[in-house]
Length: 169
Image (cartoon, rainbow, N blue to C red; front, side):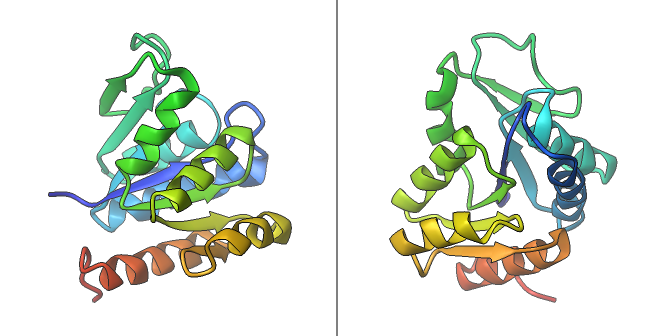
């Protein structure tokens, strides 16, 4: 079975830095032969990560909040239609072996909280120490912060090796 890396982050409110990081992270995930999972919509971090992974030949799963495929990113290979709205966030995190939050928004906060509550490892790719401090209080052994996509993919590999899901080279 393929390892799935969930990349979560702001949609319409993503910053240019969030979008650059997400695109590069998508590429690095694909080049590591990992499967990318996003929220599937054609906006923000989910679209940027999907486009990056697609450019690098990766496999992309999009978990859509709507009941149809009308608003799916062109870069998504497998669209999962949920008709669950924001409740689909639980599917996003439960389906991911590691969750990476690229930037922060209200939906992202809920995904990080659900991931930590489910015992998942979470990497926060952002330069905001306050979000890290907040989540660290609840799960100091499962939440990490990185500053670059390269640091993030290395930490992802380390976590997957710890879980025996990935062999380091």
